[in-house]
Image (cartoon, rainbow, N blue to C red; front, side, top):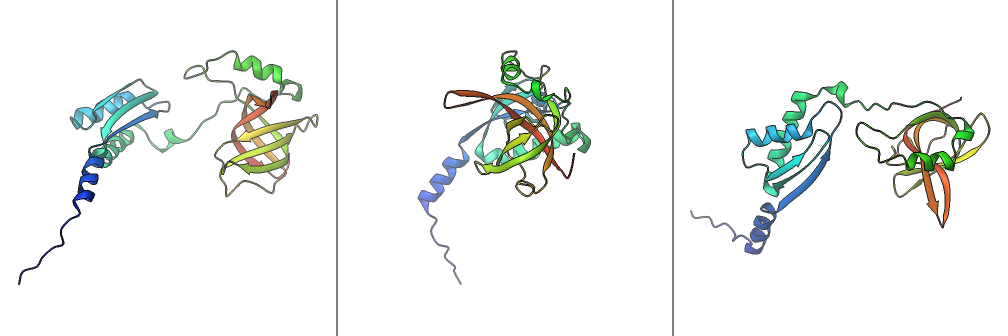
Length: 207
């Protein structure tokens, strides 16, 4: 018996071949303890030709690969990460400069900090921490948390925003929250005001 397979769609195969030969470009940021450029160099040495080009330094890098090699590169890079890091290395750590009094959370200080930059690796922007009463909370832009907070020591009110929050946890029924934040300048319709740019937030039942 002779079996006949259906003819392949030539236009589909042409498009698939084109996609596989397409060049993918990416950039990366690393964490303390993992030299990302060295990791890319190790991948390139072990798999010659896999990475078309790359460059960077310990904390940031860029590279180009072919689309068809993405899975191979992903596995090779994952191998390098596992050689250098363990689970404890992947725990986020935020170092705070301490609590601020309500009078210190002001536009003047926010602008002062903004003008001291640029901030970056080895020269991080100051972070502060504190406990606040949550007066209002709502999700904006799909997964960003907009807050109105009250400073417990003075009842001063501040706006705050936390990006990419866990939607299973926020909005939250608890009336209080522990924050780690930057002082930020919010500009809206020509008006400038201080805003807390939240890096970490967790609900509290009480202060």
